[in-house]
Length: 327
Ligand code: KG4
Ligand code: ZN
Image (tube, rainbow, N blue to C red):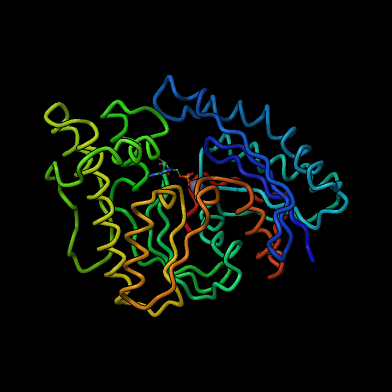
């Protein structure tokens, strides 16, 4: 049994977790920065990096204390090394390197997207490769065939905005506040998804790529003509329709064991429900991590560390931070 310390600081969540190789989460400590960024309507990289510096050390200590272990009892340290905001990634990676050096433990540099992508196996231990992963977060919108640890076949990506970015921009346009995804979802619950005719970019096209910029612009054009609730509901329905249609196209090209959704937008109930019924139509298992594991956290980074540790994949202490790092 291995015990892995995971560190996450690539965007606006700072987190530390201790996870065992059987999937037991011994501790998870997370600090959000929403309040610090809210006045600006989005994440301010410099503010984020400073906040990570302040809280990451204490979070690591708190996680070790909660698990009742010392650094000596940890088998490896896994830190997000990208992609993300360079200042934040540096804080987590340098902290991971320092702890690894001080305690004489191996370092595992984790791709944040791999963290999201493997997280469903933390809570669903029977999930076998290859699975079709719809990775929908603030910065990414991809369909990947996950064939193994470190083996990802990208089937599709977004040609402009990510799905989460579309939620965030729509929230801003509608004045619903920050962070946008949960705010749009809450407003949508009170609106009519058929009230506003909005475009479904790329719907029906033969390759499963995504596009959301046109949808966002369409939202901007109808502001004031309908209630924010009706616009939010119609927008959310358009996103759901696009995600389902694009995933259906991908499902025609591969033979996965399951349909899996991960990333912050996977926390959206309408998105989950629509994908679940798409999977059922294809007689496929549907796997979505619990809501808290969908948005950024350190348990998924520690878990990616568990998987890499088991595969003997370690990194040297001079591994660089990579603000851009495609899977
Ligand atoms: O994975 P994540 O926490 O950070 C990134 O790696 O990007 O994803 C954050 C994104 C944001 O765009 C946020 O608005 C979106 O996920 N999000 C949601 C919901 N919760 C978070 N989008 C739609 N509905 C939600 N409930
Ligand atoms: Zn993320």
